[in-house]
Length: 158
Image 1: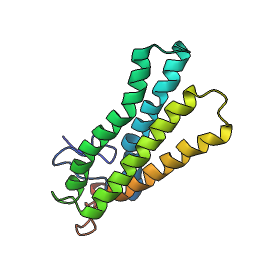
Image 2: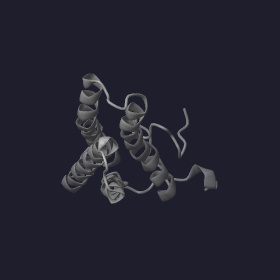
Image 3: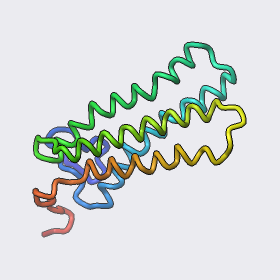
Image 4: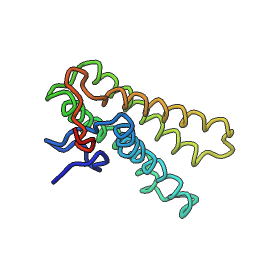
C-alpha cells in the first residue's frame, strides 16, 4: 500500500514521516491537534444533555483528562522512536512530557470552566494558551530526525 503525505496513521511501523514541513504540520495538527479538542468537547456535550450530571458522568469527566494524558504518554514514546530510528532522545522525551502536561492542563481547564458558575470570560485564555503550548511542544518532540536525510519526493519526478 502506497503511503501519502496525509496518511491518517503516520506512525505505523515502516511508514515514512511526511516529507514536507507543511504536510508534517498538518499531520500533527490532525492527530495531535484534533484529538484533544474532541476530548475537551466531552464536558460541553455532557452539560448540553445533563445540566447537573449524574455522579458517574462527573466521575468520567474527572478521570478523562488523566486517562488521555496516560494514553498520549504511551504512544508518544513510540512516535518519537519511530522518527528517530528506534531511539527516543532525552530532549524529545522532555518536550513530550511538557506537551502532555499542557494537554492535561488544557483538558482540566476546559472541564472546570464548562461547569463553573459565573467564570470570567478571560479565564478561557488558560485553556487557549495551554493548547497552543501543547501544540508547540508536540511539534518540537515529533519533528523529523535531523541526522537522517529527508524522504525523497516521488511526486517531483526526480
